[in-house]
Image (cartoon, rainbow, N blue to C red; front, side):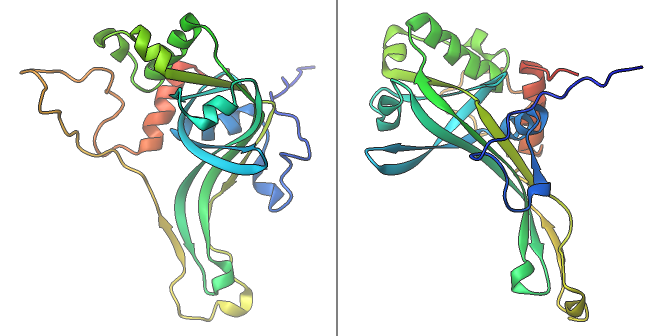
Length: 241
């Protein structure tokens, strides 16, 4: 008898269990990671002295670990130095759902919510490795063309890592859901797709003659942003089959 391999998934706990529209929720690694990898901006939520904060930041993933970075003067990063419980969210808007009643208007979206304890990446070597990894994640091959990180660069920057303890992805797709009694309403209903698209490159006026973009092959003008991000995620860290 052939055994079906188990699917890697995050534990379902009270803090990540979907209570509303639970049929849209997924807890497996592949679903959660697909959302994390499709977006570059995350919101990191935390509490300092009883005051809640939510800070937008660029993030990247290595396995089940998330990273983000910022200035050494950042209140968020100083608070997370010794380990701080955080909630990290990433979301993409995919469509505007237009129905025949205001209550049934909605949106198509992808979202991920991750929980864990954030802590600083300590040591210059570890910080340099993480900062190089950030460039490799989004612009593969570009590190080879750049000035290396100086001691001052590393000193002025803090990098935070968080092992994902548990997480949930939630996705809505499809058309509007109207009540049968509303279908006779002649108002147009349906979905307006929303896509973030890469624009034309704007060169720096200090570029030398014949400067060739490096690490930008995936960022072709007109390409959907999340498509480029997903391709780069596969190049950086392919998901297991």
